[in-house]
Amino acid sequence: MTEDVLSMRGVTRDYAVGGSFRKKRTLRALRGIDLAVARGRTLGLVGESGCGKSTLAKILLGVENPSAGTVLVGGKPIETYDRLERARLIQPVFQDPYSSLNPRMTVERIIGAPLKVRGEGNAASQRARVQEIAGEVGLPHHLVEAYPSQLSGGQRQRVAIARALIGKPEILICDEPTSALDVSVQSQILNLLHRLKRELNLTMILISHNLAVVNHLADEVAVMYLGQIVEHGASEAIFERAHHPYSNALLKAVLPPRAGSRLPELGLQADFPSPLNPPSGCAFHPRCPKNDGTLCVRVDPPAAGGSHVYRCHHPDHMSDADMRVLEPSR
Ligand code: ADP
Ligand code: MG
Image (cartoon, rainbow, N blue to C red; front, side, top):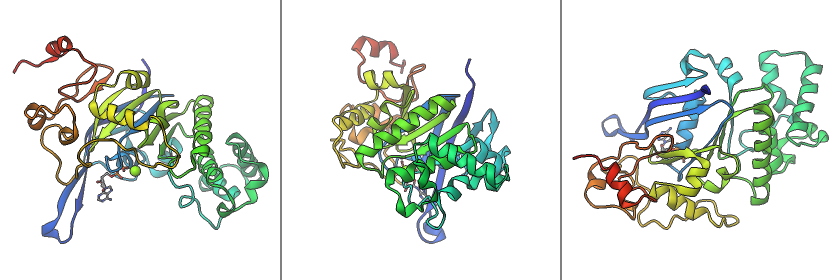
């Protein structure tokens, strides 16, 4: 048995939105998330903008608290760690490497900051470690003297990755790490993450609205829709035989990838629903080609399947015979 280094049980996150106190409404950004990631594995988390990916990331990073449910890191509740302990274990890499890097600091100071905060070693050893990690992420030596504005987008993201890794974390949470980069640079950064995860045995969550981005990196894929995980399985299983019609819509959208396209064109009829007013039954039913007009509209499908979990009354790639076996007795 491999140990789950990260897990979530029934995690819900509500935000109060709207003007005055009386008009406040509840926006449920996450709805009962169950998720576990084993050590050394990479989980790709995909779904359209607004489905709750960043909220999930913030909860794993401890910068937001769940409204309900539990988060375990290394088997212990996340709230039992203080900020420094958490930062030692879990580090983020964000989408926009420019706004996440202090423009007034040199690359050397940015990358070395975590060592300084913790008082690890002296100035000379810190500098040596910065040079070492800069080399590992493929930053030319002379650039450690540069400022973020003098770097390309890809170089900035390498700086952000170096800063995340310098304290030897076990877990890396990458939230859309390549979405702000040119297509040609995206694959370089993904290759870098791929190499680092193997060399450092990192446990990684790779968040993207684009399934193609997680394709080569993720051992398993979780597909999110309106605050829920609607399908979760091994990458091969998802890419070869996705069960949820939404996963299949996402898969169709990413092939072939078009340069410059940010958000996938899903070819689905309706728009992404508002989490302030979620559809009844299966949240995907208004857009789903398999909507039966009755069960789908009334009943939120429970999680089914074993190691390949899905929430759908009429999963794709299942014969009628398969369906009869699965049909609950009503
Ligand atoms: P994603 O990263 O998948 O695009 P987010 O997690 O950022 O999605 O957002 C999920 C939902 O929660 C969205 O409807 C968003 O508007 C809402 N949301 C996120 N953060 C806040 C917040 N601080 N206050 C109110 N609503 C929020
Ligand atoms: Mg986001």
